[in-house]
Image (cartoon, rainbow, N blue to C red; front, side, top):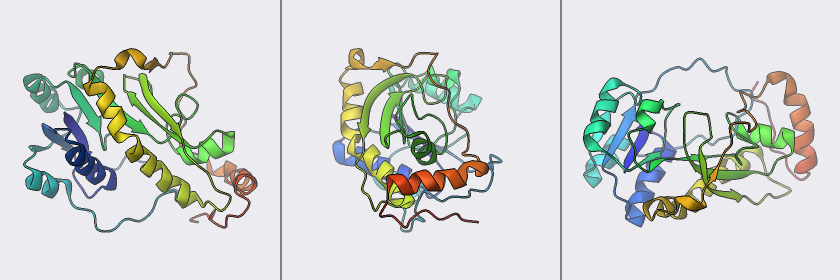
Length: 237
């Protein structure tokens, strides 16, 4: 299995490496991309925790003797390396949109864990859009294709909600939900259960972009209606 990751401290990358070790899923190599500015607008609402104590993925790979490549995921170098390795399964712990030339190198596919219920909640700012549009909070694992948050659905779970949930609670619970379904998702690929997966049709709802600032006031109202005991919706600016 090839793990796509980032070459910096990153909670999801750390969690996925540890979980692979715990469950005995062998990582043949980590492809770690450098940070770069994607030009996204400054967030008006924080949905994730500020983390401490993470271990750099390069240090983890040295500890567990996993080959570690600092490489652009969509580069010719990455494609050539994958062609030599002929991998079966890829796993996204941190990546931007992967090109079709990379996806096609994997005989069984590349697994992604998305913090939303596909196809209703695709794209960016999943917590905000799910609340605004009245969808359940949940996680989807899927085999990617060339579209954003599409391909074949492996597993979907709805997560519990509580009246005093804050926006940070929801964001962190989505991270935990991905770990909850980690073993079953990867096990289903390694044991060839693909016949049970659901294809996301091309006419499905398109992916969401960043949540617009002019809808934040209405989002706050809908959040308060859904979580009446919460005091956890506060704009950064």
